[in-house]
Length: 268
Image 1: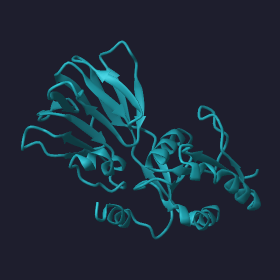
Image 2: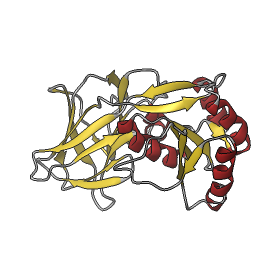
Image 3: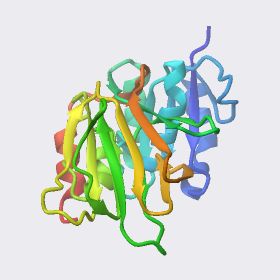
Image 4: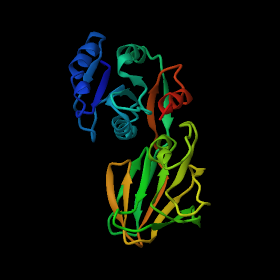
């Protein structure tokens, strides 16, 4: 059976989309089939996916591919590119290594977030973070956080972030959270502008059940990997647990997470 690769493209980046015909021809010349359009609900059998875009693009590709056990190679056509393994100038040399199986697979923790105490059954798989944020017209909000049923300190704040190690280099980092290696099995809780000096970021076990409910404020915006948005009302609870499935990233040998962090955050 002919080996197949999927192309996941951020079509807002013209330089990425214009590369698609070249990539299809390149894979064909190497005996592979490359496809750029398919149904994510019923994808064809693919050996891996090449994501062309920034971190948001590879995040989406990895999250959608995870249930089908398809690994993703991220090619950076964005700005920072924490999740992208390859810069655009390295593309073809990297692809040579991948089709020759000169790579390792890195599995990353994902979370399941669901809305409790509501008539609506909402459930999202998250690779980066769940963000709780007050509306701009409101004053501070208070979010009650429970870890496996035990309440923890819940100061008034602008919001709260529950992140995976993958999400530790995203919004959580901007809010003062730690950078956590993706090899660590953990979840992070970071408050956004808390009004309490004792409110520090927490790194907790990936086996914890995290319940977050709104106890002060009329409403709270909740986003899931920045993609889906719901409004949390008093009495609603978002429950966050680890997902039984993991996202898979293709990593080339000799490129460590620590070197990526040092390079991407230099002078920023």
